[in-house]
Image (cartoon, rainbow, N blue to C red; front, side):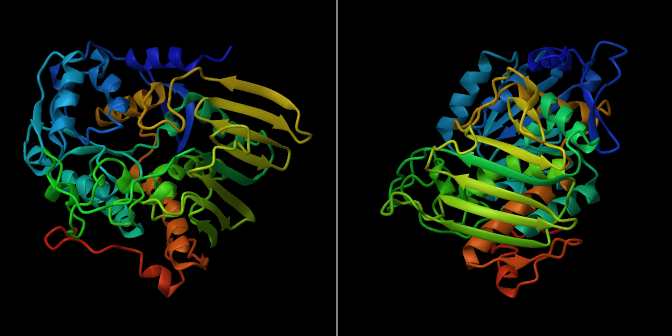
Length: 447
């Protein structure tokens, strides 16, 4: 009988976990601790970005078996810092320092680890700043705001040699690891196509208007590496996702990262050869949402393999029977996999096997957290200690993230394009104009 995810988590927190072998995750156990974890193994952790994703880190940071000390809670909004402090006061013995400036956190030599859960435009800059300061980094998805930042993250990681895990936590789900390994071993024959999807019922958002900076918000630091602009109402609190490209990466960067990563993992492909996209804003035409809210994207790879993305931010119709997941088609069968488990079908469509993990990981709900995130963060901690292998190292995560950037760029220039399947660069001058971004003077990356 396959173990359920909660049993798996108990083993992880006892010092046992799945490890990766030859780049393909498998169900082998890491070696047990030979002694009780001591102070020399303790990691000093800072969390930057205390908004909706904070729940993903409360359990792995507060677990005694994680053997970490939370030394900083950092956010540009005072109320976020205070709420996070109150939350952790019930979970940890020490009292972490509250700080609004990530640069001060990174300047503290006591800090070993940065958990980077800031807005999208801060993910890559905050990570490379941490690497330069000698820290290991867990960086939430999207790991980059644009393609060049993904390249830079890999270069920075190689230069400084620290551990960098991307927060695409389904890479650590035992059920996903199990079925992807079986796909690689031929259980559905030759996998040739994956359909990744997401459906949500996001409503209207306010039309941005000039406003006073909210009390307690450091607007200068919120902008950080982004070019300066006036504060607009409601920008700082989540809706920056939909208010243009200065801070966000639209729904594709926000959520497609997860399912496209599973699709690419299952098909064992790297960069596509061709990208085609149809995207538009289909709902609430007069609200403040400036990005597309509906997208169909097609990525064609060598070996006649294909990945399709069906993203509906504001239409909750469950086209595939669920609000998010990935379907992998093979020559002898197919697999449906999501955050909760998988279903295996033969070529006739008959259900052969189903495994549900019974976990609590959020689907389309805001924020979230759950046992899958806990396993992923613990894997990061244990890799730093040399006891495990990363489930999503940044050089792997950055490739999956590139698919979201291709889709966004194609939507912005209104046409598809061809890609160099070796380097990942785009064969289109208009598209390459969006390969990087403009930075606020003084915030440019310096490798």
